[in-house]
Length: 473
Image (tube, rainbow, N blue to C red; front, side):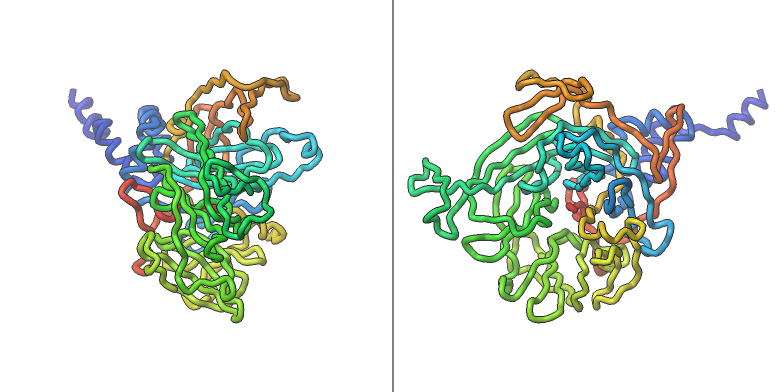
């Protein structure tokens, strides 16, 4: 009897409810290690509801920068630590690709991996050669292949990935700017460009793909915009809206065109009133320090300026925060110590101070500088959000025509941009530098650094727990 009491005193057991409350407030890296403690902890942490609750309740959310500069692996960087620290960088393989979707790409061994966007710890990738669309949680090493898209998703459309808090659904937005102009009779469309004024409105066709509800919607709106540059096709997620930098044909300057994910409506935000195409070139459009931000080069001076919108949608709140000598530097995000992290033309990720001086740097892609022009990047928040809470486990499509691909798999085709596979593969898990899974389903992990906040540049969150730094490539 005394022996049993001594054993119980030496091995006290907390109630599972209390254990859950403690785990919900720990960093992702710690929670992943605790999966190894026992089967009950593994089962608890693996529950989709636990992952969602952890996202909402995490005491110290941590953010990392993901880089894709080649065809084989991604590099995840802790933006709270010095870039030249070995522990700041974790490398892991990219989710695998399918066979080429078109015959002309079967002998092309290079694929173009593009980041569509990041949201709530999830990253959406697009592989051009295979037309694969993949949703991926790099923090826990799981991915799922989504319905295929036709070639050119990132070549011909504005695109973005976001989350609708009202419907609890994840959305992929595609917007095409077509030369279909409004005629004098608003009920008619004139497809010809002849005799059209420079500021004539054209029809914008948009498509909304909802992952969780498995729905597809499309519509049209008339605007007077043109694509500013291919690098601005990816949407910037901020304040529950996706934002694109486009050229206004009416105002003859770039403006911010945005889509409200809750209201499902479009609108416009102007840049700072001093901006003119004769004076400035725009290098990048990001979320930095919890604000929408543009980096511009002065045409007549070898200087770059970073402007931030201190108050969302208020034109007068645009403020020039930093000016430094032009070096080909393209800002990406703000580090935990207030430094400005960005890439340059030589294949280096650098951290600058507000005077443009290099504080430290990291050579990404193992020095394969030829990929630097194709660098894909996004800031993501580490999370335990499972893919079963994002997309249905099974999908049925009873419309469209069917055909059989080379592997004998039946593929369904919808009469639109989508080419939808009839069978969605099960969630994939693979081994990488952060987590690995053994044959018993247990997962181990290398620890990431924890976040810290700086008084000068702060990472802010909205009321729904969404980080302001989550943005596009």
